[in-house]
Each structure stands twice: as structure tokens, then as C-alpha cells.
Image (tube, rainbow, N blue to C red; front, side, top):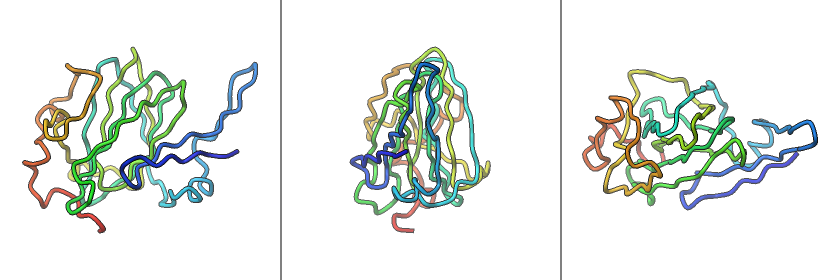
Amino acid sequence: MSLKFIETALPGLMVIEPDVIKDSRGFFMEVFHQKRYADGGISKPFLQDNYSSSCKGTLRGLHYQLNHPQAKLVYVTTGEIYDVAVDIRRGSPTFGKWAGVYLSAENRRQLFIPEGFAHGFCALSERVDFFYKCTDLYHPGDDHGILWSDPALGIDWPVKEPLLSAKDSRQLPLKDMPQELLPLYGK
């Protein structure tokens, strides 16, 4: 089995295409293999796995943790999403830049999001089952976010009037975030 690691325009943010073995019965793929991922540059241990289910039009994000930063390995098992990561590390050469990737049960792609990035996705199919591995545990008191529709970021979401949580609809634009609430590049 082999993996294809595809660098994006944001260093460290990688699309992963796993090998998928198909036959008349269906398919098989490895979702995670520590040594193979380490060989591709993803070596920090994952401590928590999460599962979310969303209906069409749901947008979750843009979330991050500051004092307990989480790198994430995300993938979809049912449906399709548009997944977005934004570099919010103060001092980064790509600060405020974002990348978006379509992930689906059909393309079986994964996205690795490094620490220091805000993350979000929107559900494009009637139902989405979304899984992600995190390199640190969830800490409710360390939960932060950036406004999904921040005009300065200019994220081209494929959903114009998404279903949002109250928390996500109240987030601040990146330029209005107190600097002490943003991660530091190189830390």
C-alpha cells in the first residue's frame, strides 16, 4: 500500500490520496498507518478521534485551539464537503491565506491541517459523515474561531447561506482578533 502526499500552496497543509483496493465486493483502504504517514511528514501522535454528521448546507468553522493546538487529519465517509484551512499564525509568510479542498466518500481524499490553522467545512450533500484525528485533546476553554465569511479572507464557499451554530455566526474577522488569541509562527 502506498500513499500520495500532495503539498498545497500553504506549507504543511497536505492532501493525501490513499491507495484504494477495489473488487466486486467493494473496496479496502487504510485510513491511517503511523509509519507511512510519518514517512510523508506527519509524525506527531494523534490523541483523539472525532465524528460529526451534518445535513446539506451546514457550515462548521473556522475553529482552532490556541494553548492546546491541534493538527488534524480529516476525511469523509458519507457525502461530500468543501474543507478549508486558514493560516492564522502571526508572523507566517502565508498569514491570512487559505486553501480549500473537496473531500468525499467517492474521492476518499484526506486533508492534513497543521497546528496554527483555523479549520472549517461545509456540507454539500444531503448527509455528510466527517471524521478527524487530532494531535491534542479538545479543551472547551481553549476553543476559538474566525468568522467564516470574513471578507478580508475572501473564502469562496460553495454555500452562500449556510446553516450555522450561534457560536460560528458570532466569530470575529481575523483582523479584529486580539493578537494574543492568535498562534505564533514558528512556536
